[in-house]
Image (cartoon, rainbow over all chains, first blue to last red; front, side, top):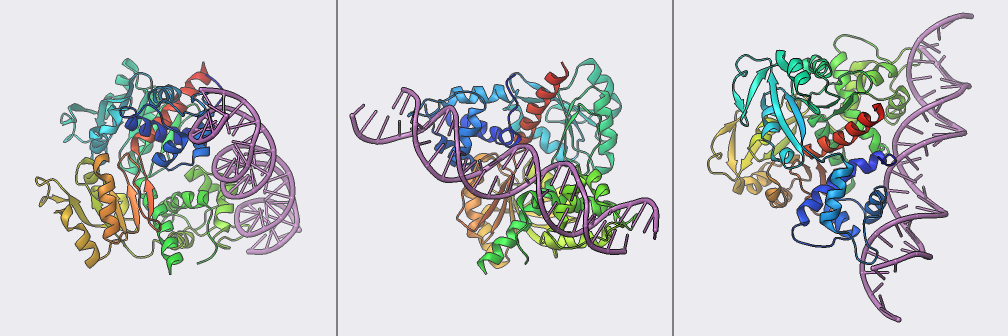
Amino acid sequence: MQQPIPRATVARLPRYLRYLEEVAASTTTVSSEDIAEGTGATAAQVRKDLSHLGTLGTRGVGYDPAVLRDLLARALGLSGDLQVALVGAGNLGSALANYGGFSSRGFEIVAIYDNDPDRIGTEVHGIEVRSIDRLVEDGRLSPFAIGIIATPAGAAQAVADLLVDAGVGSILNFAPTMVRTSDGTVVRQVDLATELQILAYYRRREATSRA
Amino acid sequence: MQQPIPRATVARLPRYLRYLEEVAASTTTVSSEDIAEGTGATAAQVRKDLSHLGTLGTRGVGYDPAVLRDLLARALGLSGDLQVALVGAGNLGSALANYGGFSSRGFEIVAIYDNDPDRIGTEVHGIEVRSIDRLVEDGRLSPFAIGIIATPAGAAQAVADLLVDAGVGSILNFAPTMVRTSDGTVVRQVDLATELQILAYYRRREATSRA
DNA sequence: TAGATTGTTAATCGATTAACAATC
DNA sequence: TAGATTGTTAATCGATTAACAATC
């Protein structure tokens, strides 16, 4: 692996990737300007970001979207399906399981866990919901690349501990609380209400500036 | 309103707020160190961030979590319930409607729209799903503070246009595609697959660094 | 007073932007 | 060649960190 890619760049690469997937079928070249427009970045940002991955374009011409798409996917570590364990089969968990965007982009939810007897044994997106008691055993038998926590906040830490026990090194946490894990585990926190609150702040500023 | 708060700070304030809500009932002072631990920030960051809002703590003592919580809520524009229109009553939309984290934090989903006749007329989280054709009219009659797009990517731009027509100035877009709106509209893009992809990148780096 | 912790300054670090030579 | 667009450099901007005086 080459030198590390700046955090801000890593955060944008998936958007570029999504855009390239969108246009790769219908066009044979895209410019940094095109990518910028399609993703909300600036053209200079796009070129700078891509330059971290090597020399990918052709001066005077642009980039080949199919080539660039494959390069980005590889740079992000998306070659091959990543097996995902989902914990929490409630509303959010079910939504995530049914969300089309995952399977089409290199992630496969292979197991779903819950602690509610009423849910255990039911099917979500064609996958049987299993008891949370089986998570550690299952993970040791057949490792998960990524674990997703979609439980209420109160259960999140215990679930994170189980995931670590099961050998999961990367966790995406949708529960609105911080989970603590040992070093070497990567945890990403996504709080849906947080996004609304950030929006609320800019909403008000915008309203005031119009006044 | 005082001077603008830096973007990076705005992005962290909701996390501080969530932490303060958690501890306000059980303790009467928190230090910047406590907040940092509970939110994944650093103590210096916390103090710097809070200093943008004024002098909120007491040297040698710390912050009053209840006072700080109310201050943060006000700074974020969360005083009073913000009326939210949700478009898309599929899996993700239903999950969002049922997600407890919104109502408890100043947001109320007051209307849900869809274009699928099978869904129109059904109830989600106690709210009747209405035809998308009524969105503009409804919004003009009784304005929405915020619109949430939870439709497939293909419908997102059309929905965004309708929301703008309905007078909605702030949009949270969960569809995996950029939507374009006129200036003065604030759009925030949340892509769930993007979060997984970012995680996948750091996952691989972590794995490599251990090797 | 002694210990603790804020608020703020200055130094460092990283990201963005503008500009342009390289090159198709 | 002329026009277009990349890859890269240097300048600017903003965010983080460390340190400490102020003050409870």
